[in-house]
Amino acid sequence: MIQKATNLFWEKGFHATSMRNLQDHIDMRPGSIYAAFGSKEGLFKEALKCYTDANIRHMQKCQEQTSSPLEALKLFIRSIVKRQQDNAHSEVCMLVKTVSELTEDNAELLAESKRLLNMMEDGLEAVLIRAQDAGEISSSSDTRRLAQFLQIQLIGFRAYIRINKDNQCIDQFIEDTFLRLH
Amino acid sequence: MIQKATNLFWEKGFHATSMRNLQDHIDMRPGSIYAAFGSKEGLFKEALKCYTDANIRHMQKCQEQTSSPLEALKLFIRSIVKRQQDNAHSEVCMLVKTVSELTEDNAELLAESKRLLNMMEDGLEAVLIRAQDAGEISSSSDTRRLAQFLQIQLIGFRAYIRINKDNQCIDQFIEDTFLRLH
DNA sequence: AAAGTTATTGAACGTTTGTTCATTTTCAGC
DNA sequence: GCTGAAAATGAACAAACGTTCAATAACTTT
Image 1 (cartoon, chains in turn brown, red, orange, blue):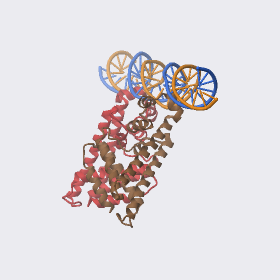
Image 2: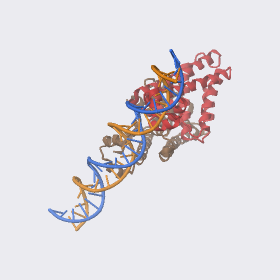
Image 3: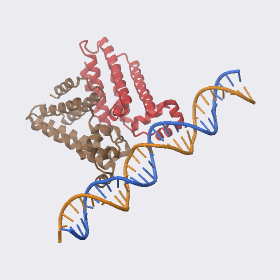
Image 4: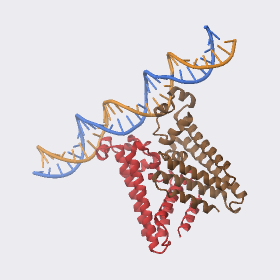
């Protein structure tokens, strides 16, 4: 049910999603929603959490599929890109979209989105450190910097797919990105 | 006056900017606005044009400041990044923000934003071709691909600054990006 | 200066917004 | 099966939304 709300918020954004839209989409009446979440902002905050949790789970799934941390990272980024390419809506990352949309008028949600994005970056770095321990990348590499680099690339890729859905150049850019990590 | 409207739309986004906000900010009454632009969408479309024109002019200014096309590109990207770092609002590119925010409910504005972003990419490629002619990058380089690459990097940089305003890592990433062009 | 044309005004319209709350329904525990 | 707490309902609220238009003001032309 929070899942459904998350998808609607993700697609339409915070402001363009009305409580009526949500009521229809998750099949709940206003009273119940407000009893459970207090406000539109409260529900949105829950959606941000739901979205981030799903992404962290996805990252873990990727790590379980291979013993190579670097391969897991590639799998992670490739699958996100592929899903966006195949999906009709072709949405960018919900956290990035939120950080882009909101202002200080919704300071708490804005700060929370930034916090979750930095959490995702920490997750990337954790895998990069494992790659370093496994000897897949140089021990002299700055893993924090590499995580920032990957974060920037992924954000850029997803925005570009949103703009030019049919352009298949991204697959090659992903390869190039990982060549640079070594 | 369109300038002022552009700035407000840029900061708050299409949906969060109300016609009342605009009336106050540009000091016009609803009747005049609707006589001139027909609708909120009409005014927003004009704002998109205004924003893009300013960016194209900025690119041209950068080219006038140096005889090296590659140096002009670096100047362009660095100045955009710097402005965003110094500015209190720290907004991402208005066109990217709009593409991220809007759905098929505003199909025309969405398509127009994508079109303008591709126009900007064409502008980047034009300078890259000049760089190629000047021998600054290999004649075997795919300038279309390089333009896509730069576009992706710039979008990623600006999103990252929006998330982590104080993190100064971007300056180094810009240097790295241009090392890769040779 | 009068007449005609264009631009500006701001009150008002019908919707839609986020939210509330008295009422009804649901479901334990006895 | 009755009772009391918990959850769900949906009509209703004030405020804000995008937009319209008769009335007024400001310029042009003669």
